[in-house]
Image 1 (cartoon, rainbow, N blue to C red):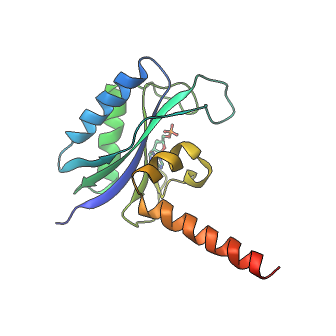
Image 2 (cartoon, helix red, strand yellow):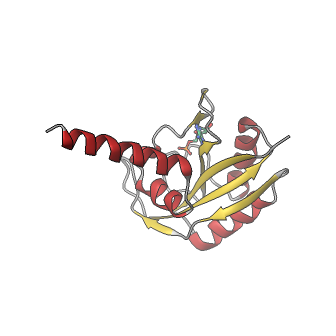
Image 3 (cartoon, helix red, strand yellow):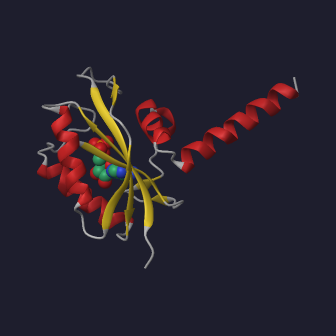
Length: 156
Ligand code: AMP
């Protein structure tokens, strides 16, 4: 079975942010049939969403895995739990948040999992680290937007 290429973005805004990212990275690298192939540097970002909260550190990982998308999500949620992310912490401070942004070029729309991540295009803190590790899907989306803009400008 061949490996899938997956892009993850990790975020943390509670406790020791460096330690949280580093622990989460080692846990992910140790998941079965999974290894990290690229990692971005750490980016600082302001909290996003309706609730005021402390700043985040984010980083992106390129991961090679033989796991299915749902099994990978299960494992990542176990990593979040292990790092003591509280339940119901959606849009609130959290030790670690792990989002699957792309999984090969798959499109999934299930209650538990949406891929590509539903909001990736609006999140600078996804785009910047993903571009740093040369994520094809982000580069492709931007090149399509640029082509469309230059065509629109030509037709003015
Ligand atoms: P959040 O609190 O924003 O991290 O949302 C966590 C919930 O989003 C979990 O219950 C997941 O099942 C669900 N979810 C849907 N799509 C994704 C995705 N692409 N990556 C991670 N979690 C996802």
